[in-house]
Image (tube, rainbow, N blue to C red; front, side, top):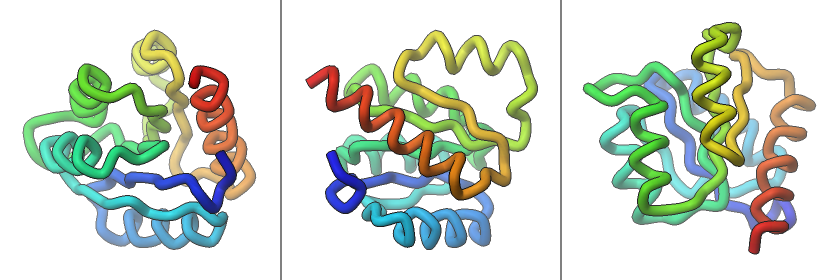
Length: 130
């Protein structure tokens, strides 16, 4: 799947960061399938839009964490998830993400090349699985 045909769903509770990430994703040639700022809205939005990739903040407004939302999404839809967090050094978090399969952990703020590599990596895995 090429960048231009991949749809990305963004989950970020900081509106400024969400807008910046959306612009960055579009600049890289991807389409933004939707955005959410809570775990609950993320689950609903992802299951409705069925994107090829989800970029998920770990700490969200509402009662669900990004990890909770991702697990809920994965029960219904096998979609690659890139976790985007300021707390990427947490070893327990790294283990949780690694155990999900086709998920990556990016430290905020991610350099453009890091984001490009993460998106390409999860999409490559997704294509190979089809």
